[in-house]
Length: 440
Image: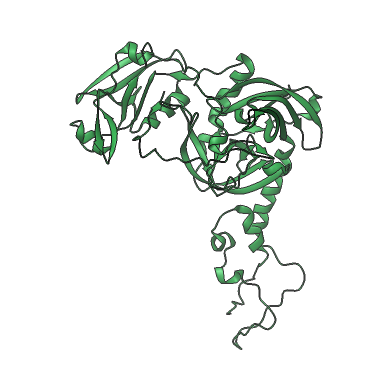
């Protein structure tokens, strides 16, 4: 192995780099990958190169030391705000008997009044909720309110105000793919665990009801991360390196029920809208158009006589009596076989909302959740039989879905000693039924 005498070999960085959870060891270290091998005194080297003996503590590169210090500061600052949530619920056994089921999840302190935020699926159906703070303080909790359609809930405990250290909420709209991320929670019941990684994608969507027979609603603008998230992390925090909460860890995509490097967090932007309403009003009203649809693909556009490059949100169905129906929006009137699947065709195609371009159905969902309120008047720009027109309507309140418990189907359930469901979240359409439609 050839060693450059002009460079110091900070080999201890190899372990430190792993804290960042990224694969770019050479880039982060500033050294070639070959230096990750540990040198020994009997390494064969050319006579022109001296052997470096490493006795005692290995040196640490200054940039690695700074990164390590940042991680330590985030943990020290935020860990006291993260709590363990223990739940007891009643479950029905395969033999029809009632049995007690215990579970664990995570949560975080919202304010000094005792409000704690977690996932709805952590406390859904709980008959008893207990909060354990990082210093071991334990308190019974009561449910303030929950919003299954954003998978968020608020619980409350009655302990001295000195016990509460609220988190600092960040701006998830400024998050970038590639930036470092930190998760703190209680994976598998291991309290006060920190894991690190990067933001691996943005703009993901999580369905809120996999059991629905018709269209499902979706949580938009979900953050994807390779930061290890496991059962028990649900309701915990995803942070930037300044310790700001950029998301609530909520789901993983896995065939084994544990981390596979694809985790999801509900963005702070949604948390900041939903949680205050849950505390003050006891509920959060999602804006509602009263229609379902799918993306207008090039194949569907061609069948409908549109330019193959045309994009938009194709309206499949319109809910009777809803805002869209009242305004005269028209759904698909027929289907066509495309790629071996039956796809809706012939309905209105939404290409903009309030002047903002709509290229996919998820664009429509994102706009409503981020920029609209119940009672707002919006203008939809549509294509009907190839002709463009504007239709205005007033947004209503989205109705509750028929099935609100979705955690287990998405691998979002809190860690349980005897989990009875382990179906992975699969973000793919059912090939036998065609592309699924989304409601809004």
